[in-house]
Image (tube, rainbow, N blue to C red):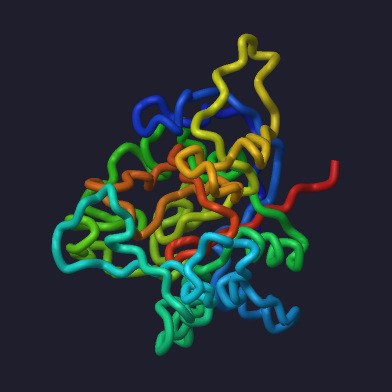
Length: 305
């Protein structure tokens, strides 16, 4: 793990999506953080040691999803399934499929495997799965503030984790999408889907894949905006922990009472034309029961006070 001494930094952004605002100062204490997302190889060690079964491998229960169609109550996960033509970018169902049998072992369903991708980030992990791994490893999931502090790599005001240019000097610094999303993937960065966790240069703190490749779970409940800056420097929040679970429900789906956590970092599906969230300040809500082919995690360790 990599030791970060902590400090005060400006979190969020006033220049992009509304949920990133307002930009504000927070302070974090020192912590250790994994230099990469948890890999398939590491997650496999956890499963072999504990016999753990992920959410995507369990059959959903009707009492948990009373409005579900009976034929959909089968084990599976969300898999990116690109169309071959332009689609309405407001309708994510045009490129996401709930695929029966998709899970961390078979990231693209039956017939796929992780045999040749042990050093790729594990995917199809719901929040409880990430928490279970972290507990087994004697670690924890990072808070949103810890994650963003780490992702910035000491470049507080930079647009990206490596500076202000997306592709400096023509060099791709992260696994993102090139081309017209979601039907045209030019693969100019060398990858169509996930990539090995050290395939791209580390940031200023020596951390790989803080941006792109897979979204990463954080421990904080989601709310659609940050708190404003403290009125006085002495009141800057230290180690903030976000919202309450009941504040994280999706207001567009009042019947759906599944709380949401904050995801950070963007993924290989983030494109300039759609989901420009390959930046440290970017954030996204994810229901805790949901897993997908572009969501993973990394862990932290906080020394005892």
